[in-house]
Structures are given as C-alpha cells and as structure tokens.
Image 1: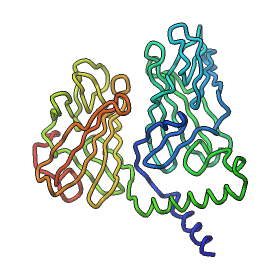
Image 2 (image 1 turned 45 degrees about the vertical axis):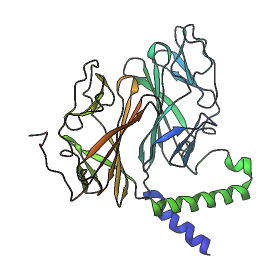
Image 3 (image 1 turned 180 degrees about the vertical axis):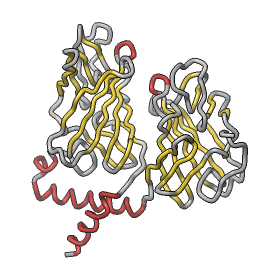
Image 4 (image 1 turned 135 degrees about the vertical axis):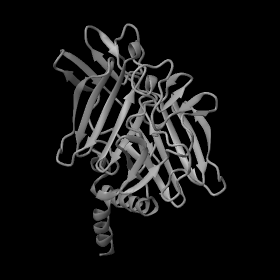
Length: 341
C-alpha cells in the first residue's frame, strides 16, 4: 500500500519536475549522454543506421549515433561519421566523437545533439522533442539552414529520455524491469526533493534579465559592460558585441575577435536558491563555440569577481565563474551604470 501511495505521489510530481543540467557524451557509449547523473540513451530509439530522405532534393542521409560508420567520402573517408549525406557524392556531415548535447527544456523534454567537423565544415543538428501522443518515434529532415548545417527533428513518446527507453523490459524481463522502474522513480523522487533547478526565460528586449516563474534575475549592473576577461574574452550580455573576425548575429562573448556565443536565446538555469547558484549559456558561436557562466552567490566576495575557468572541455566550450555577494539575484541588485541608458 505504501508503495502505491509513493508511486501515486510521483505521478503528480513528475510532470512538473524541472532540472538544469550540462550534459556530456559517455565514454562507454557514444549514443549515451549524462546530465548530472541523469542518463539520456538513444540506443533503442531506432534500428541503426537510419536512412532519412530529403525529398525536395532527392538526397538521403544515414545516421548512426551509437557506432562508428564509414562514409564513402572522397575528402573525409574516415570511419567516425555520425551522419553521411548521399548527394552528388558522399559527404561526411558530422563526426560521432565529441557530439554536443544541449538541453533546451525539461517539461516536456527537449534537447539538441550537434555533430561537428564534417566535410568542408559541414555539421548536423538533431532536435528531440518528447510527444506522449506519438507511440512510434519519427525522424525527419527539416532543411539546410544556415549553409552546410543539416537539421533534423526527432519526436515520439520514448526517444531516449530518462526512464522511457525502448527494449529495456524485453532485455530484462517484466519483473526485473518493474523493479528497475521502481528504483529509478525512487531516485528521481530524491532528486526532486533535493533539487530546485529550473530553466528561466530571458525578458524581451533585455537579455540581461531573466524570469523564473515570476522571480526576476538581473545581471545588468553586476559589471560595467562590455567586460574584459583574462585579456582574451569580451563579455557583452546586455547589448551584445560585434566581434572583429565574425560576421552575423551579435555576440554575447568575443574570444580573441571571434564569436564565442551569440547574444540571442541565452539559456538560464537556476540550480539552487540557498545560496543562489545559476548558469547562463551562450551557444551557436563561430564553429559552434559555447560560453557558460556559473554564478555563485557568496558573502565572502563583497565585490563581484569573474575568472576564466578553462576551455575546450568539451571542445570549443569556454567556462567562466562569477562570485560575489550581489550577482543579480532577487532583492540584491548591485549599483552601477545601466547599459540601456
């Protein structure tokens, strides 16, 4: 009886649970990604390799996120191709190693996987969106935009998100599968109790302000922007910068003159509230550079401080740590020049 009550409580909690995470490709399996201990597994979503048609041009794509596959590419003939385009000839559209996993939202689950460094800088982006009304997963080609970026959309009830993985019950048997499901739900319930993480939305017209279910975070006055970091990075979170060597959208971060993360669509994740800890991610920079800022509220730092915490882990990701007493959290806004005046 207690177990039924516990599961009933979980049924109420799970639809509204929200998590913030930065995810990494597993060393054991290239189609498994781990987000702060939570696993996303593409192994049983499709029978790989999957052939995907581009009917508008008569091209085909072969995708295998789990195993090395060869692409008969005259320029990139290696066997580490995640997706191979069959057009006038074969093209490697992204390597399987060091795939980039980007969480977009958690209710329902939505994420992206990017495969980089294909032939002549080709890259591929898959967008995954859980749809409980689609029992059978589907994958479709949605277009080439921008040039040499190939975009696909995966949707379905079970597309690799936690605790919803095809093939598990068949491999383990009904009893063992039920035991595993109960254990997984128990661990998830603990995570819900311990985590207050949520994804917050940038406010229209001011990408330095974020709304977390009615609670506002405002980093407009934390520093005097644009702010130079480590003599190598320029941070412009409110109005953006034009990087010397990059054309196109404004950057939130310039790295030695190159766009290291676009100003538009920053991802704000509130990790905890006591003390406050949150991250802001700027994505889609030059060659898909990413910059991640981690904010840690601490009474030990009356004046805000920022340091470069390392880069290229994973490849082309730049990490920064911001500490201070007032970092834009509610009821503690620093004084300073307003970049919008």
